[in-house]
Image (cartoon, rainbow, N blue to C red; front, side):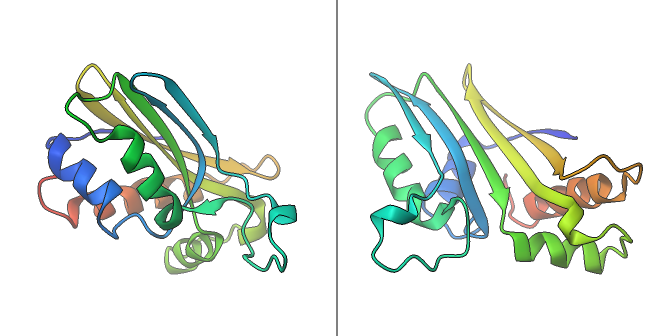
Length: 157
């Protein structure tokens, strides 16, 4: 688990809500506080679709960011928000493989990124969820390093 502070709120928000940098993530949940508190459960309801073949439990961020943007935009900044994003499972496998981890990918439930805006500051916190207890902390370190490089790859975040 590692925490990061965002230096440029404007640039970060543009990348998060308009850009494509976060499109490999899934939205687990969102809470947006503006004139009301809006809560979004990112779980996909397969019964809504005639032929459900998405392959994910949660909605793709790229399909949900416009909704979140519409709730946030306006003349006033939001009171706060909290997004819980998960990296797409195939990306989790890729990070483990490229990092040389011996932990099987099916042991990692998710690589999670919490994004919280409060008191005019954005904080990001990484987390790793496992399907069972494991002693190896390599997946945690690989995820923390990935996010650090991910954030550094875009200037002014």
